Image (spheres, helix red, strand yellow):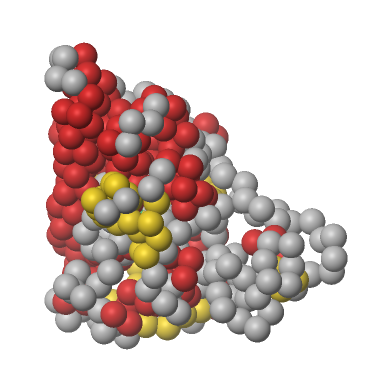
Length: 383
Ligand SMILES: CSC[C@@H](O)[C@@H](O)C(=O)COP(=O)(O)O
């Protein structure tokens, strides 16, 4: 990450006390604005409004939020509960909150006193942040090596969905970290960026990161993916994950499943990239993953004109945007969908690659993964 970038997330001592300071992703790419959260409700709002979003950084936000509660003398158990449930699908959020809560509780039990316990909570949150940055580097290595096996010869045209880069991570991200490594190696011909309706994480955020990295990229309407495959323009699909069940089913941004079906039909590798902390062995299968349902106005109003944008129609509809549907239109707005493992060529993690994607392969990875081991050792509870 270049020095001049506004940090995606940090815990900062301000004159008015400690705070979690976020790069407000709802304002990108128009402006880089920081959002200062001095209490847990403000951070929960930031998580729900997607000012901070994407599985790994949600874990970091959950961790810093609990540390903030401890430092400010709020009820830590309540804070962890609020944060763990702020959004239901990305397992990392509950993981981060519970892990830091467990560190705080262990410190309190050891009798070190509140101030030291708060310091231990912050140290744990910082460790989580650092681990995620390191995981990102390993993911990039594993992912780029896998791609050169799957699609030898370079000149790759990679299709991605949503945003999986530095904005979702302590490091360079997950799927986009792999793309960045391929780009640095001179082997990326084009990054196809699905716009990712309704909130345009692809068009707004991935395009922003692709431009920042100097990649050749094109943004496409989600509905244009089919014709792109039919034209033979896609060599591989790389996406992130919000939760991977024990059977290898993958919950990710809505629209991912359609891309997996297209990739399967056209014989194109479909690769899921995530840290091991996104694997949830307690969720047996995809049908057990809770998919967040979001407000109708995200679909019925143009995000470009509302809180996610700066267009002339801002502020017109009930959600703050300008209505694009008839008044009273109902909407179907799941934030995620679930792709069965049979459609996934490989799951790339910071601890290795699972391919073919089977429950046995996922279980084996978890059993040998230090990340997964520390998760249970730190008292992660299913939320
Ligand atoms: C590495 S990020 C993977 C996923 O979290 C990402 O693809 C995604 O679906 C994010 O959804 P969002 O609703 O923007 O939080």
